[in-house]
Each structure stands twice: as C-alpha cells, then as structure tokens.
Image (cartoon, rainbow, N blue to C red; front, side):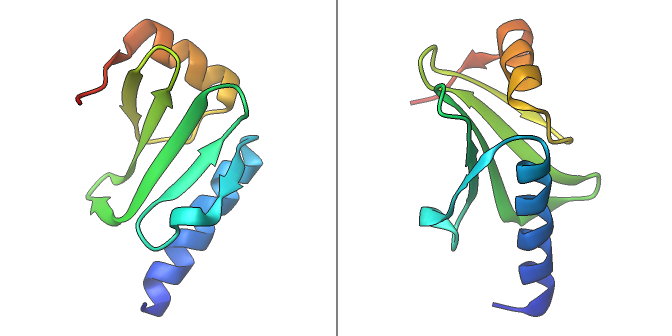
Length: 91
C-alpha cells in the first residue's frame, strides 16, 4: 500500500466520522464503510478516484436503495437523498 492511498483512506475515514458515521474497518483493503446503526451505509472505494474526487455510494439496506454522491452527507442527509433520488440496487 502506498503512502498516497493511506492518506486518502485516512481522509475519507475522517470525513465519514466528522459527518456522524461509524467506521467499519472489516473491509479496509477494498472499501471504506461507514454505517449509522439504522440500516444506512456509505461506501468509498479508495482506488476509484475520479477527476471530480471520490464517489461515495449511499445504501439503504431496508429499502435496497442506492445513490452516488461526491460529498459526504450526514446520515440524516443520506436518508433524505436516498428517499428522493435512490434507485434499486443492482443484484
């Protein structure tokens, strides 16, 4: 793992925590996962950097909805975004 990826991972984890997400470190080699204990998650693929910055995937596990964003929302904002714009997750 190179130093740049480590910094990106740490920055993303700090962004998640600052927005109110708990960090699930169980998949840290592949994903950065934040959760709120209420069936919502936010995912980041550290290696999938885009020109506009990282893409974060919001997931509502109860409704099976997903939505991609470029900014880290709070769990409350994520729920609203998923309700308004979420699409059924692909199987």
